[in-house]
Length: 317
Length: 317
Image 1: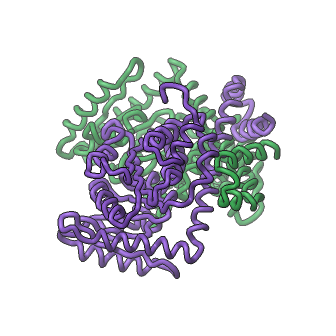
Image 2 (image 1 turned 135 degrees about the vertical axis):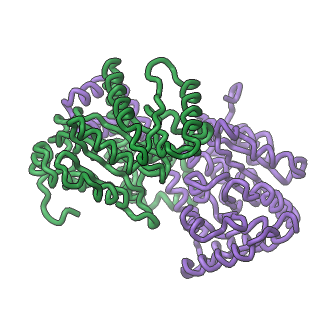
């Protein structure tokens, strides 16, 4: 994948020094599931945990790329460095890297304070759930103040990515923001901030009101999810949005929730890693037991008993 | 869940004798993940493998329930007994058992040759992937000639259920059957037979032609996926559809593919069982290691190293 010998130590040093090329190579290692990842992880992990991680999700066409661009601009104006990870659903119809390319072509391409990278999901959910947090840590370790993670679509992938963020923005459009839709899509729970984007269009006020009502009904004590209207056309709302992101971070830090969220995330990630690893072992045991399929098929053993015997053998390896 | 002592042996005997009440209780055990399932499985498993398993999938509103009803009628006319498992996506909006209830209210309710049961997925994918094949085996062991599995929607759930079937029918409607849609939904691969239902509507011929063209482009040697037009209004097509189901079964048997499919399915199911079981062990190890979260958070250990140590401990338990 990397076309030569990869020196995890060299790349890790480059990442820690904030070198763009090293950061790009490290994320490629994450993307391809390089065997040197554990070493890289050990080397960069102590330098992570400083960046604030912002997740952006919403339906295709909601204007997330443009919004991301404006948020980058706002962040730079406030003196913050930014890393962007654009998670692209890999499909034969959309191709793998459209989103990242679109972002890269924008005006930030030559700004050393901005690093933009797309990452294909290769259609592997487990893979993304593990790849996203590791890629975020690379950007974090490289010294970025903010890491933005942008995803396309609404579904399990988005929920996975939202789990990797400190502050999750759910971007909707006027007319789409109907309460039932949002509740159905299961994204009410993942939103820390709702953004009604393209707010210059008809129905924006209604969408904001609907979402505010819904948020009011479901909010418990603590953070009340704000609903912010933004418009690229009118150049409105991004500063308020950024203020709310900072307010959310302050809220998370003050109540100890930031640490709690991050701890839960790490534990979930480790559980997923363990699970994938054990599954691989189970597969090896099964592949090394050609008699198993025949026994199942001839009904000499039932699936539960077969599973129990494989669990025993995984434990014995 | 079962409101009393469950005697797996008694229930298994009832299932094998084809008693409706025992079958219903056994499927409830599957649905609730009863601890007595392994015992039930061991007792009924030798009596499985006789029924032909038909999966029906397609978008909501495609008319699957009505089609199922007509297929039941056709099967009964041909002297075959039928078990139907209606997989309901559990959501606060649709409720858990609408589909099964709708089917049960139909004319077959008093026919002893027909058993209809809905099963909620409880939003747990892994759960469904394991619950569906086990519930199918219960119906199979009870002596049904045909087991039909009906699902709502198109997505991972449907793919899981299609994996549990010998013959998968994908039901589309005129106007929906546009090639791109079908290809995008990832259901071209899972269809053994395409059904253009509500074929009395405009665009049915076009839908049939489109699907036939697509099938022609992707079919390899062996089974060529037929496209059958059915209409409940005109009472047309169900007999041809049933002929094609029987033709598919004969094809699968003749070429040894039925055995191969069933073997692959069993192995995938066992792998999933093993994986879930090992994941449970990993979770226990993690819950029994309160220092782990702190070590991760204080960055004394990185996620990869933490995962490796948990894998070791799962193997040592």
